Image 1 (cartoon, helix red, strand yellow):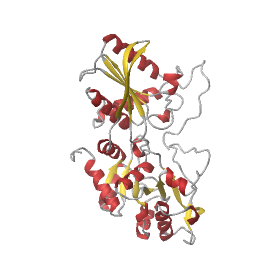
Image 2: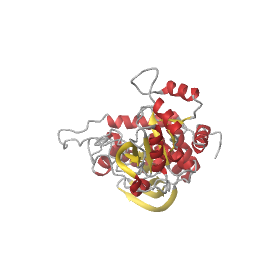
Image 3: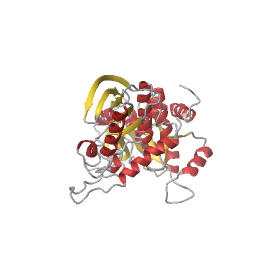
Image 4: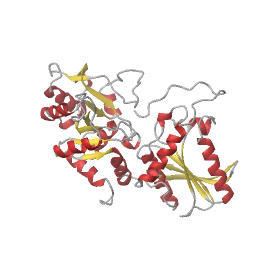
Length: 374
């Protein structure tokens, strides 16, 4: 992997810091929480590290764990009806047995380290407690670009048991608010910490790990014309995608990238434009005898932009996967993941779809919004 790629230096520095037991500052997208978390390896937690964390953050210390670790420790969801707007998968709080009240830095360090240990058992913890386990999604930031998954990914990349402690950094300049943007940069510089973005981590993993693999191909006659359907599998998150190719795929073939939408593509809802955009591209490419439709099916729950506007796939992830498929087909990059304008165009399309009315007079009442991320 080319060390000159944007963001790779920061990601590598963050991995080295985490491996050495130091915390790092991880920031997410401005359209999401737009906040920074202090993240470090759970198994390397110390009283001093917890004291530093509590001093500079909200003090709401969480530990991101894999689903397997949560199941092994019999950690159950905090509530069966999760209404957190980002779907953060909070589990019932815990303390390690023998840590007194559980609230001190030393007690929380011991609980944090035990949660991350591959040899700990459910019997070692009491519930409720003072440390909040979080259940990370399989696939990490490639499935959900949140701090929970970033914590697990960074620690895993550092060669440690995949469990990361995290806590949101508070603002000194604006008391009562969370630190953002330039203030996070100043905080990291003042304390000698590496600052890295989740977007950079996504790109790093996309470049460093195996790309999508061509799985199968077949002729596909459609109402719009003849296509070759080529299936792709992504070993990183288990997702499966499709390319519909009209005529021979060439470097100059026109490209349409489409993210699966259950309500539009399958149910033909009039509340979104997804199906219309897909049909228009297929008609145009079939008539010209040249063109590629990249049909992406992100991992996780079904995407249904008109009923659940917050369930849209992250544009950075979408762009990266689409480019891997186009590279396999020998076509030009249409949505460069390293090109902020291209990524912004995908985000703009997402916002445009959200702007469609949720229902018309002939539609059923809209369902309650689903959280964007877990």
